[in-house]
Length: 175
Image (cartoon, rainbow, N blue to C red; front, top):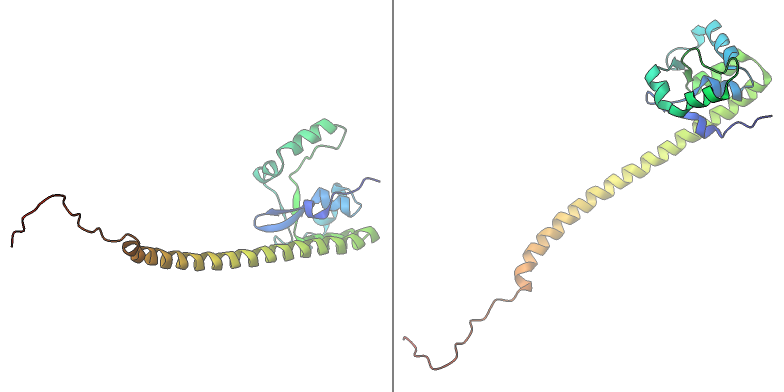
């Protein structure tokens, strides 16, 4: 039995959404990509745009340029994609498990949903950290301005005024 890669590596960001590709989802659910896509087409009303969408050629080629080379090297009948892949959101992945209706798909769907939740939590944590850094940055800019003003005011005090030099020799005062 071939081990699947960790789920967090399978979840991608496309069109500002976290998604998993049909081939990866089918493998996780113990089905073929063809069977998964057949069931999705038969139950199209369960898969609106916010659950699933088909990738464009640009999106597919930008995902992994080596992917097409690897598929070519593996060879064999049925190894090449005839159509552009589908991307499933968290809700779409759960719905796919329901339409496949196999015990393996149902049990794996819980695993998939938990992976999406974990990634969402990580993203929220990063957002909180970025907000905090922005607040600190704003505070530092205020401090920089205050320090610049203080430095400007202190500069004359740090350089004592020059005393007039006494000239050597006898000088007549002009009073």
